[in-house]
Image (cartoon, rainbow, N blue to C red):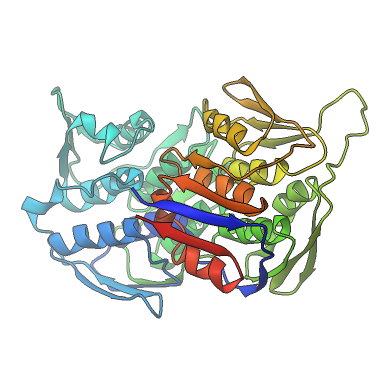
Amino acid sequence: MANLVVNGGRPLSGTIRPNGNKNAVLPMLCATLLTDAPVRLENVPDITDVDKFLDYFRALGSQVSYDKAAQVLEVDHPERLIPDAIEKLPLRIRSAIMLLAPILLRHGHLRFDVDAKGCALGIREIDPHIAILKRFGAVQADTDEIDLTLSGRPDAQAIWAEYASVTATETFLLIASMAEGTSVLTNAASEPHVQSLCHMLVEMGAQVDGIGTSRLTVTGAASLGGATRRVPDDHHEVATFLALGGVSGGRVTVETDILDEMPLILDQFGKLGLQFDLRPGAVTVTGWTRDVTPPLTAQMTPKIEAAPWPYFPADLLPQAIGVAVGCTGDVMFWNKVYEGAMGWSAELAKFGVRCHLSDPHRLIVFGGNRLKPAEVEAPYIIRVVVGLLIAAIQIDGPSRILNAGPVKRAHPNFTENLTRLGADIAWEN
């Protein structure tokens, strides 16, 4: 796996645009399978997960045209998919779980190895997805594999989810959009990428009410048509470029049309001393005081809590931690979404960071660290690579991030973009 070599201590400055949101484009690609009419997507990020989805579509007999330079993708699925290819789900993509509903609606049957939880479908729980499909009428065979059959058009359902899962909400949306009647999901996820899927399904002919809330009402259509949609900018990437610019001592402007998604994100990074200037269509990081905003209650440690949207996103905690290592004060980070997701923080000690993992959900980063260049190892988590980079880029001298390859799955041309802003960063194979 590729390593990332970072020569820190150099200010980043300039203007940049973020790429399209990985977490939005993949469910939007799954939605294209719900129709045999042409679908056009714009602002499509050039990432490996998209390529794997498109390879799967081609195997199904679909016509695919992808202009990576223009970031425009056109997909036209056949009326009948090639049966032999259906069960060959794209490997090592967690979002492949969202292919289940469209394939069942189009083909009526799907089988895959349950062990795919560790490879093709990632390590996240698949039970909520299977439960939703079964509520809509899918029948699971009694085998060691996941073997699902859906006969005819499903009937609408009312479901109260155990927790607000993004991908399970998207599975619900995909199957409910073609169900007979009106379906309701309570405790739905409301992230921007979920909203993007909702708007796409509306353009295709479904009726979706409650977009952006925790209660979605979907009136399905017997058939869905084509659509032309723009993949929204990635708010994770907006925050990442701003954080990198600020901690490097530079001034970076990010041009984007998703500033309405950014207020809480910018407020939380502001707690860590980053300063911003907003104007229509752009946000600039103008400085970094390194000071942590203290709470009015003197006995409390400043904290940043991550939870399902509209809370601060859990996928931005590593970036915030990367900023905090250079702050003068202490900060507690609380991940209310994933257990054990901050175990990588042990690598920060190699940079000279003093921190304490209180439990599987909470990490305290102490202020006033004397940072030094280091060689650190990233787990297979995209955002952690970025968090380690934010730490490294503020430290004078060369650092190396081992196993940094996963960053390419969400951030196209990442090192090239940072180099244009003045970073001294390069891949080492």
